[in-house]
Length: 461
Ligand SMILES: Nc1ncnc2c1ncn2[C@@H]1O[C@H](COP(=O)(O)OP(=O)(O)OP(=O)(O)O)[C@@H](O)[C@H]1O
Ligand SMILES: [Mg+2]
Image 1 (cartoon, rainbow, N blue to C red):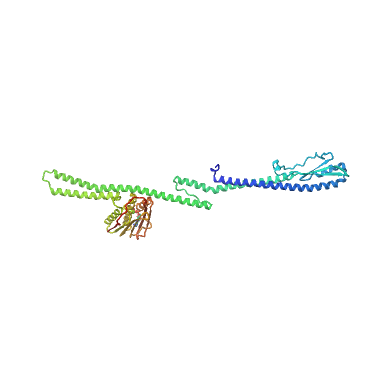
Image 2: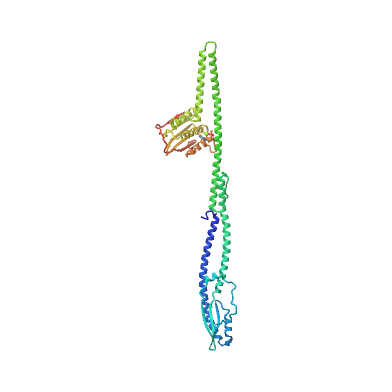
């Protein structure tokens, strides 16, 4: 389409121009049709009037001297409108033919005259004086007078219409510029968003519809800005968390393994010294050293297990998910003897995706930690089951509940991020009667899994 690249303003102006052109053509047609019949009626009426007028004049002038009668008549007939009266003598010569024809000041162009001109009509009246035929008066219709008049009106009408339309189009052009300006501003604001500049905002324009669009745009930009800063905060926290984790691991390796390794080294050296001594080997001492080595190795194994478990909960993916969760709660119970941890994991599959299993595990772990750490809870209950195509998890406590103004650590936001990354939902409120965390993670329907056969109940204090 040739107009496909046109602006809205140009299109609207073109439509108005087209309507104008059609209106002009229709108006011209109506004017021509009306003018045609008006000219015909007018010239006919004039012809009838003039015919009787000329006949009367000829009769009244019968007593005038015959030599000047024709000239007198010719002079009288020269001022008539819409008809021409020519006085002809008996030889067919026109009397007073030298008198220049009256020319109208406005002359309609030929094409216009052709459009309107009715057929010319001619009548001839004999002129006689004292019983002698002197010649004749030839009456011819002359519509050009009327046509010239109509042309004058038509030209004035055309000029007025052109002036009014030009003024109207100029006003329309300016008005469209003002009306469409907010759309141009919306376009550049969208480009700003495209370039990740979320500070773009639109002034509310005067028109109601565009004001709604501007308001929605501002809300979207605001939401994008919030999401972006939340992302930036989370990224920062993740980086800090990674760093913290490394530092903690390094510290544990240093504080736990360092002394143990030193003690192992000292015991080994002592055994070597006993073995290399000249005196008889002291078996009791040797057994004591071996005993110490055994204790230290046990200690190292414990720390090692805890470290590995923190980095990646062992058992996940090998033992059923419900068993891993039971074990987790049991460990919590052992670590926090003042709190009761109960779990109900009926109807959970043996396992899901690695990511789903880990997310469920981490959420229970973090919620239980928060319940003890922030809510001072005495009872924490975790329930997990597969329902409506999703793994549904609830962890509630009887602690103080989440304060209205609480800080945002990595725990809650991390849980939300993990769950939402799996297209799940995460909600948090204080109906636990302390805090209650609810999680639903959809499970792919075509997964190949083994449904757990025993409902699990864990209780530790
Ligand atoms: N079970 C709960 N009972 C009472 N308050 C809670 C509970 N869970 C979370 N909160 C409140 O919400 C805040 C944020 O918790 P979140 O787990 O995100 O961070 P954190 O525990 O302070 O630090 P992190 O988990 O990163 O080590 C907490 O500081 C606490 O005020
Ligand atoms: Mg926490």
